Length: 264
Image (cartoon, rainbow, N blue to C red; front, top):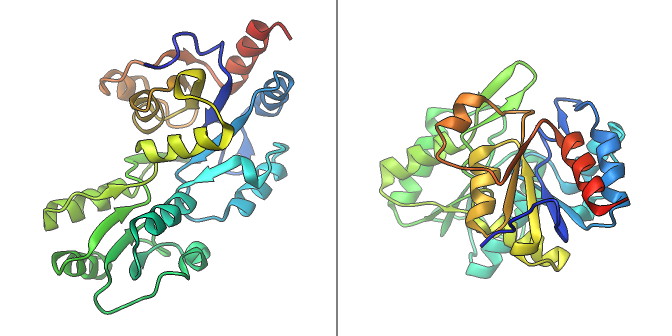
């Protein structure tokens, strides 16, 4: 069972894009929100499905917006995917990943008949030939591993389709169910909790995605705080079937309430 009161927690998990920033700009109040959370002396890990950047690059990007977040506080889906592949004993992979993170998978060889197809974000966009190649490899016996199965995300001009649509397409065509590593899978939440040394019932997840962030966290036993920034839409929340533990206007609002609750 997840925490009953998310304002009395011992550790915080948080999404990044849509909660702390959109595009290249910090969300209003985000910088002061981080200072408030730091003042509460609570451990925090930033759990993100971003598939195109190294953790060091994500940290540098946050710091450029005035958000002092070190790389070792970030848990992202490519890192989690590598750990998952090691644990399952994968040796050869067909990579549908962004060129920027390809080096993370150097320990896994390429082969004409790989044991695993890994789906992340594709450099330059998706096309039929890429999907068809993956389809054939999977039907020939390769496992399907997805960095995440997000439906959509927020960019400067609105919502945009995420990789979950392509993962679902491969599942439909091959009849195989993908192993999903990133949110809403419990894998990401468990990894971040272990890194903080905090139990699920003592933690809270803050996010703008009612399905991946809030629904995923609650399924892992973590309370879910939904912010009304980023990809938040009233209609999407209403149709999700997910009941957030708490809904707040922004990360600033959550931080203010958290600090007040802690008596700082």
